[in-house]
Length: 502
Image (cartoon, rainbow, N blue to C red):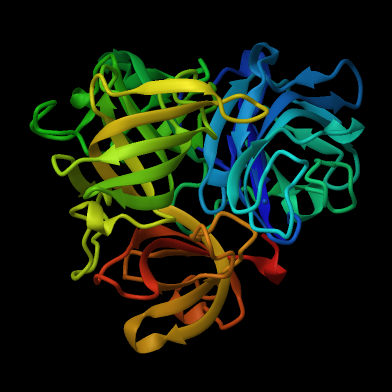
């Protein structure tokens, strides 16, 4: 059962975070505001379709979220009631911060959420066409129907809850796609065990900061306050605090000689890993990673096909992020030509990739890899809708290809303690490497290192892993050594799924 968690974090404001992990803690901040009598609270969302159908992408809009107090009117958790797009596909092993809004301290009896506009990208390997719109052995973009269960109210445990001023509180919303997605690919959020909610622990679990990631363009930098602001692709603006624990990654020497806060400048596209929600609603950054200047178009996505035509490599990319979603839509399909002049790199940050693994040319591209691709100037083109929800077909030439961590869930079928590795057998229904002609489980060798983080594992270490456990792994997927089967994934993190739920 796949679960994806959306985390709503209320701080003197409420922050909404897409979490597959745990609650955000409160970071140290002297800018508390007792006059607002507010507090941080968080809500998190996490993740089976019909037989023969692989879900490659699932997105839904959170259009309303509110807490109902014991007395008085409900409190909206969405800034300006602006809908939030949730890319569930990207939440197997990481989280994504979404929004903040003020919430008064009080006792609250229920949480109400409204969803809309679900979008699916599937690979149809079933025994027939689906809804007369998705032929066999085809990747299709669908707009499933959502019934009157789109609005859900949670009033049983953990409610009622008391929110105290300046004290973080988190909720975990579990989204079970194998229950929610029906056999006709419609969406029923009200089905039994489809969506559940629980309160998050106040102390974050071991591992990386759980509050999630933000991608956006730097709008302003305030050196005197150690703050900067970013705007996401959906137009949301966040204030980011930094401190002596904040680290900086991937800033080129052409931008600054020594990585640090002084590297930041208006117009840069960056990724922020959020450490905590501050009591004034700002976010404390654990890591700030440079992506590109705003003038340089980049996209992130999963490779779903690789082919060679007349000696030229072409990859099919399922898009998950870009600075401009109107031109390069999330869930869109891009045809990417990879010339011999394209540069290749691995975005591993401070993580050390074991020797013998390579990502240096088009021959190292592999279905299932997540990559960040630079768009060669003047090559981007779009043409007409490519499905019922009308994302255009996109094509461009790559100027650069950077290997990013993929997220894959499956069952541990073998453990090699002497090599600190295990064999992961994936589930064919969800977000896994697959071929156009082979809808089956895939085996991947997962290589761990001393830097691998563990969550939900009994010993928080490799020794706690067991055969037949269901885990979600985040790491860099390599096709090398050349021709090796299975492929190798170097794990940055391994998360065990209790009772096999995911």
